[in-house]
Image (cartoon, rainbow, N blue to C red):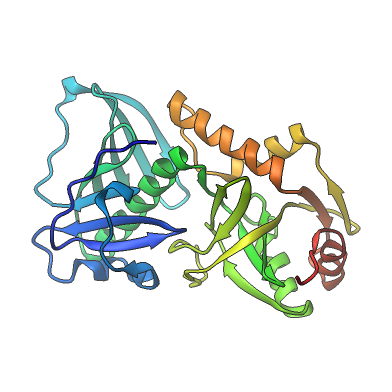
Length: 306
């Protein structure tokens, strides 16, 4: 894809998540990077503007787009607040990110490919940190859609150099399963506990740590081949089922960040999921939250050390 270089101010902070570089520039902020403590492992040196996934300018003077230049798409509940989405007449987007108390924390304006973005923060330091963190995660997820990259709601254990992603509805037990892998299985460590990044590169799938890991502070700038994706299903006995293509797609789709109202972005995400299913085994683990479930699962999906 031929992309025009982005404008990057000289004082921009450079980051790299899942081998995708991007920049954040803070206008009239002293040590604005401290608003994003989980991003510290992902700070890097300057790069080439034509290689950037996106550029974000944080400027509290940014104003909302006039009402006659946008239309309301929807409000959606993120679990820790509400985000309001407007589509701009030029194809871009405006988002208002609210926290769980309903307070406005961030106004975000993007172009249609989420490459050139601006935002204004509001409230105290915690509100601003919350708003900016969510804005960057949103931009990353939807900019990544154009590059065979998805942000997946999953917990990830690494064993023998491979990353194993566990997906499920919140509270079903994906973190519990990963905890059992870490406790009972050899050569395991935690890559991420909430939002890892999955990329398809040259027909091979890789999974990465990210700055977003839910309630578990696991912000690791690491990468591994994707060994498998497994959906957790509570059951009275432990067993593993390999999923066919159609069922695998239906299992994966709710676990990735997507915009169904944006046809181009949504189609690209679906195309990436199809590639992941083509090159990775997808399973469902019917299980109890016990040691045996980890051992049974590992015996089926685990890969041997190279």
